Length: 401
Image 1 (cartoon, rainbow, N blue to C red):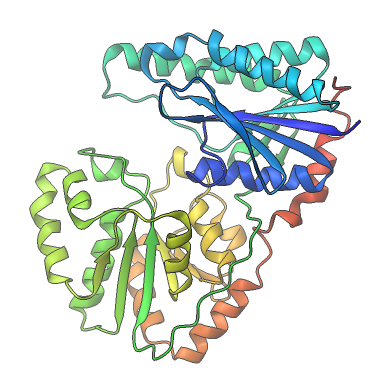
Image 2: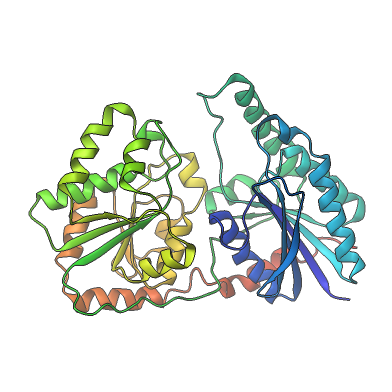
């Protein structure tokens, strides 16, 4: 009888979003430890459930994502999860653990799964990747729901789990006093190689991400795209023209539309002045985006230091490094633990970002290529590096069924 692990949560498996990529990386660890991995993610639409599919020996399906007050009805998703458990056991597997990715429909569903696990002596783990503070500018009903969610997670869900997989040391330190933890950053299975581009005359800089902060103050944005534009604008104004900056995931008009009203004209003018040096590529498939990153020399990221950015860890950093593309970023989360300054990237203060851009624009091509080679040799985000740690974490969790 084989061992099985069920992963369930709000993600699009295997690479529909950053959450899906996170789960897939961890699922590869479980798979190589000898577990058959089953995944239940979420999808948009009214279809009750999607038939199981196979992806690299991982079985996955999904259930509908709901928002608002509909999330309070947990009976339907709970029945689907229970049915999947019955299916796993019916196939002759021993269910060794359940891993919950984040808060499910609501934290009440997490609590129900934990109760089921304790009743049947099946360990239930939580994959914790972020902290979202209670929003202050939402309708009162949604504010109350989110406030209740956060309190439920802190008081009932986290302390009741058999262990927590943490994406950062910030979260591990938060949970360590009452629960066993293991730190696993965003890990990948495939090690892409940077694509050699002939006749390179400019340093190619890239950022890949999405915009979801419409009309909110830029200080509340997760990724400070405005500061990245400011940096390359100052670089250009300093007389540098041997670079190009590519932004993947949104168009120029999307960027402008998401800015607060008082900033729209300023950045529209900056984008226009940067014509020929800055390119907005719009939405791209995962594979196309990765290919574009692989053609680059450096990727960049600026985030403000706050709870959300210290608790999480940017998937875009791990993806860039595993492609052999050095990262320039300011020091949030555990970035300085994985990026060795001047070896596989640069960790700089936001105030020093322009000077760092000048530094790489002045680099000879052979030095850039040497950095890319060292970056590719970085093993920190290869899932195979975490097999022993996760195996030790899973030991002595319970009997399973």
